Image 1: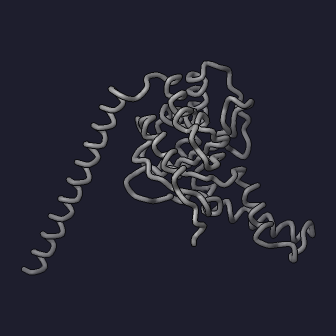
Image 2: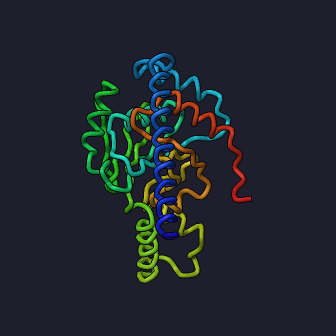
Image 3: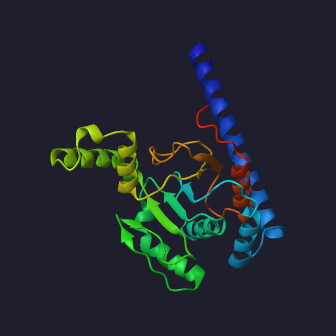
Length: 248
């Protein structure tokens, strides 16, 4: 009897938490829709100008912005918007981490969407399986990452060092933290991000580049679907106020 009562209480608590979570999600979505309709700028050109104005007060460096897509389905349209906003905010590198690998499989669709959004001819050199940036200064370097670029990438870097030791290209005495870090960075082709947005209500990195994110500031983005440009700028400003303590 007591066990059944205990189970019933747990089920009730689970239902209450679920209803509360869904209610918060619905209110957040409704608020964002209202803000988008009445306040947010309309059109890509206006959005980019809004981002430039909003990020003009940045006092912290932002050369690499990473976006961890989480468990939700990939929206190519919204990935394009985030990439262009990131570049307007001053980021030279923008990486999208999708642990499921959907985005890497849709590289051609992303290319077409970017071309359509920018109304220009694109050039995307393929390096190491990545969609590795546009030529010229008007586009960011766009990196597409998945689970194979996390811990497996560190393993590949370690194997390469071992092979070079065996072939006597480097000596064991040369191996230190700085050398290993250099090989990991070279293997992935991605510099360390100063800022990363993680999508979803749960703080999970889903295996995102553990070696590259030692000093990364992580901020929550509830979803990359239909994200508001105002939300994006608010997160950029929030990052600017963060104090990096380096673990102290």
